[in-house]
Length: 91
Image 1 (cartoon, rainbow, N blue to C red):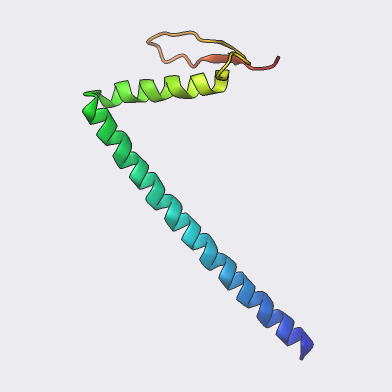
Image 2 (image 1 turned 30 degrees about the vertical axis):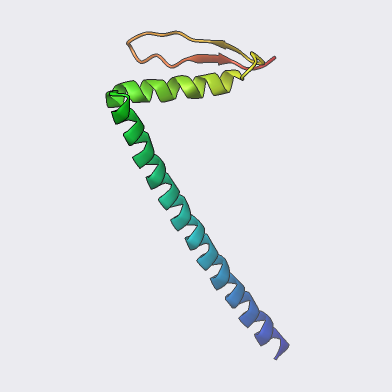
């Protein structure tokens, strides 16, 4: 009898965990969709092409990696050939 109650409780907990995971995933999806709409509205308001917007977002990410106050050393090789930047973050 005790083992059956433990098994039932385990199954109920598993179901609850899955339901909570699904809710979290649904919320994340809605947030990402909202962000995409906002990003696109910003891009259109600034009269940027999708490629220009991607370049701007790339620059923002690179600046974030390099640190706000120069705490990391970054070297960028800019070219039209799509060469990825090189980050020297080990100080």
